[in-house]
Length: 130
Image (cartoon, rainbow, N blue to C red; front, side, top):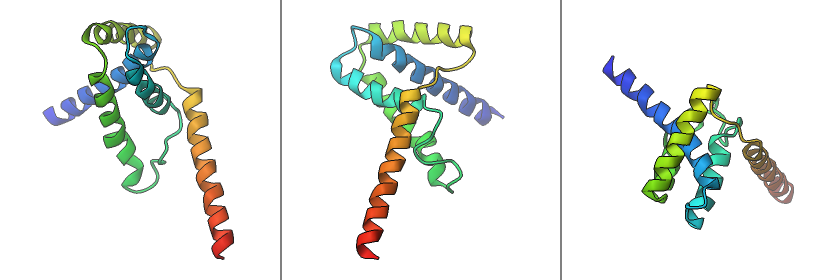
């Protein structure tokens, strides 16, 4: 049973750190390169739409299980310790008061844009080679 508790704790930390990056993106003490990565990570992490839908076998969970945690881990390492501590406190407070993470409409729009772009590129490719 300990493994399930470890996984649950890890998942809650990932969720909290996604919200932490949401606050870090707006914090004046966050370096510009960490803000740039945080903007992408937050838009994707808080988007209600996945880049790779979960119904696609194996690949559907790769972004949730590997890609997103790796990007969050990297981004957290780029933020100064004092800023990170302050933003984590804000994230904990937000999640306690709101009961959930915020949602990113911009992230959903970006994901839909990527899918539409891929669809248009495939359509153009098949029209040329078909």
